[in-house]
Length: 429
Image 1 (cartoon, rainbow, N blue to C red):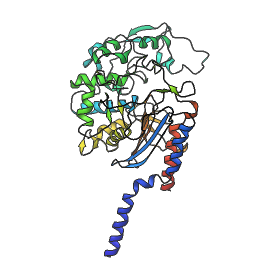
Image 2: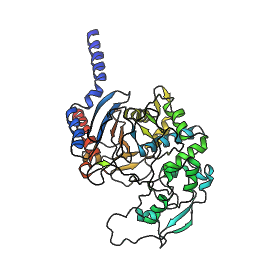
Image 3: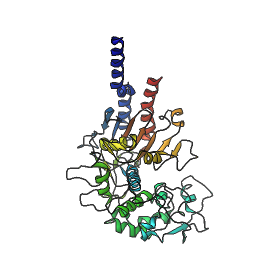
């Protein structure tokens, strides 16, 4: 009996120790996909990393074009501009401030930023909501009519903190395709603002694309949310990240400004189908300027401005996977994290739904070979991508730096993630 019990314990220990290795049994297949997207000229560099709940590496591989990326080693400590992967960090800070009673999701934004209380709403020249135009432009619609010149009207609703989280507040990027609207945003050079107060002043001079609460529209909403966090707490977003996230949870590799020894990757463009260094102003999501990363930078953009390493960002993702706790420190209550991945917008989309800027995949991902249902995912402007698998307790990252991926790189994330799950499903069968 004792021998049998000993064998069972030994078997359990062996299976537990090898759980992470069993997820990926054919690393060569994944390696070949990483190399494929560099070799076909669609990526200057590529890193894929999988981590289990405890931070152990399940899989990692990287490749680069040595002619384009001459003096950077691509590994878990390489610094990337993560753009919209900043959003979920800012939202998690908001949830933390809510828990501390410093703000409420139903609060009006004007409570913290009164400068935005007089924002007007732009309508088309025939009085239609611009969100309808912004979602149909580029579809070769022969019946499309230019909505410019625009009409400005009073807002018919009070903008709330929750609407900022859900992209229902009416802010947008300069990529709507509505020329007069995009030009107006471009002219403000938002990312060139010296500080938060100057950014708020510039935003107060721009119209909204729709009445708050009318429709979700992707844009600068989370950037404004970061400004709310600053006003509600009395701290800069940079300090909030340090004091509430990276410091207490011992996360290295996630921040705003560069350190003296931080070296960022070049900005690459594939808009001409051949990878080259991007021209100044080519990343025009906010006009001619991009967020600043220098040590002296005093503007912290909650929707776009962070930098991170694969190892550092994976640590943040593991905090979410652990429902708010990492390295012995509880940052968020479990209920707050559940709210972040609960259904909130795009509920009719067959591919999934949006939580608080976390895309939660449907079972269609499994049917199409893209992954699995129930993954929490997101990405950034220069091609970064992440997902969290709460069923199997691991996180995944696909990291690159590429504006306008050439055609040969389309479908990259689905193919790489799909291969990961092909192996997982085979093991589970």
